[in-house]
Each structure stands twice: as C-alpha cells, then as structure tokens.
Image (tube, rainbow, N blue to C red; front, side, top):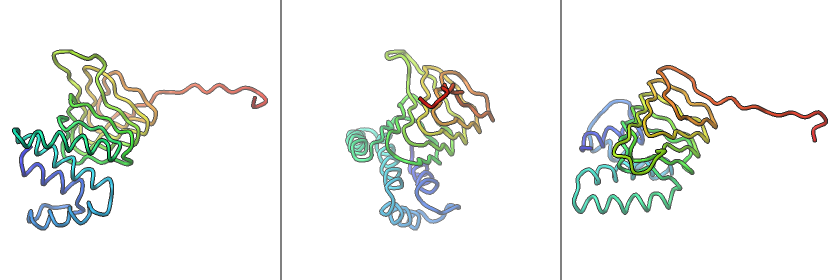
Length: 184
C-alpha cells in the first residue's frame, strides 16, 4: 500500500468527499469525521496500520501493535495483511473477522458478526477472492481454502458460504422451520 492508495481509502471510507482534492484538506476532513464516529475511527486507524505494515521494518512492528490494540478496543479482527480494495464499509463493528489470506474488491459492505476465514491450517497457499460490490449479511460466514465470489453478489443474513458464487447472484441458506400445532 502506498500513500496514494491510503488517501483513496480514507477518501472513500472515512471522508464524505466524492472527488479527490488536495491531500491536506482531505486529511483534515478525515480527522474531523473520524473523531465523531467509532466506525470511521476504526477504518482510519486500520488503513493507517496497513500502510505502516507495507513500509516494513520498525513501522511493521508498530503496525502489528496497532492491530492488536484495534482488535481489543473495537471487537474487530481484520488482519492488516488482508488485501482489501478501497470502499470497505462496516455496518456494526463487533464480531467482524477477516483472515489475512483474502483478497476483497472495491465497495465491500460487511455487517456485524461476520467471518471470512480459512478451513484448513498449514496449507502452502490459499485463494480466497471476493469481487467488487459485494454485500455480506449479518451473522454470515465464508469458510474455504479456495473460493471465488463474483462481482455484485449479495450474501444473505445467517448464510454459510463454502463454494463459489457466480457474479450478480443473491446467495442464502434456506432454513427449515419446524412448526408444531398448539405452540408448545
């Protein structure tokens, strides 16, 4: 992640500016908005930690400590090694878990208590790819070692995703509700 990428992430995720402008005015706007909202404060600090992690050396160690503090403070476990394109939005912070082995496209919207993780520890490589404009419903999980979720996909609430989803689809797990007469 370079400085231009960091500024674009802040512009799309924290600022309310639609078009790029001067970096200094963007920074002041981001700081003002992040001070007022927990989600925006988390996204600001998370992207800063990603930027520091990419620089390496002592900055990487500081970024890892930042990640641990963010996890404890906000109840979110998004690894700074995850490749998340600009436009990440989080509806509610608690319970969001994203592994470092995932590559997520632009404008990803995730709700509370969602997990994106691997199924098997210790493999040589993982291939978790989530496309652009994907929305993930509350209490949903994506668990696989190799998965490809296309662009413009909606994942319904309380869904378990273990296989590929083609672009433009709405995915949900049907639930069977057992009803008994008499309400007992």
